[in-house]
Image (tube, rainbow, N blue to C red; front, side, top):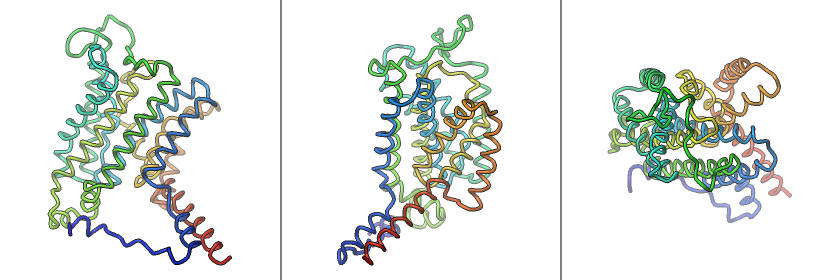
Length: 356
């Protein structure tokens, strides 16, 4: 038997002897990895019926940042690699998409795909230091990369239809958003388009974690030396993780490039990567549902505080207190806590059905 399959094989309990026990077992199981993205998509597609245009733009940004959080969840939650460069990859994805889109030769979906491929290749290059570095050292390297990207963008700016490779014309004022597809020209239609693409990114991540890469990543996270002894190509799967995370983040950056107002260099400060890590830790680093919660925390919460007239600095305090509380009482974050609470509720319902 394959070493990876043998290491992660589990024996399912037999519930056929008692039908009520089987019902209780199903209630104790969390929402399946393939089902909850569909549930989130269905809820998100209905939101425009009850929200204002302002909140549609906020939720579009939240969906985009949930994919950036998803990439970090793959790297750290599945492989154990700390990366503080996801926001930088989001900026690189936006820059690449705007440059490709301004040529007018590619349809929108192909711009998304090409942008993901470009950032995925960049992710492989970024992943090379991860072959020898880990923990704090890798986090510092990726944070320095994020700072370097910010400096470069400050001097080159985002393309605005100008000539040359950079595509920036200093004479023109402002930025030019990436042209949206014809089926998603309006804000509401584009929000729904964004949600569908984001769900596809989540399904892509789920497919990887449920397949051979996911088993290899789990082995590497537990013990890299044991993974090597088991015959796992650690180099391949580490680079694979970086490529996947950067591919998804690049697609998210392309979606952000077509949002209202376009992109500016001030949207991607290096410290935003630290905020993203903190939000994902609170939301649930080891659960992909936590990436959705992290996206809402990063974009919906500031908008909500602004609506209430509360200073945005309060959010930093909330994040700080919430992060300490998470590390002390609930290391799996909000998503993990909800999963455990639902499991306990299902167990109690199953016990009552069994005894009745």
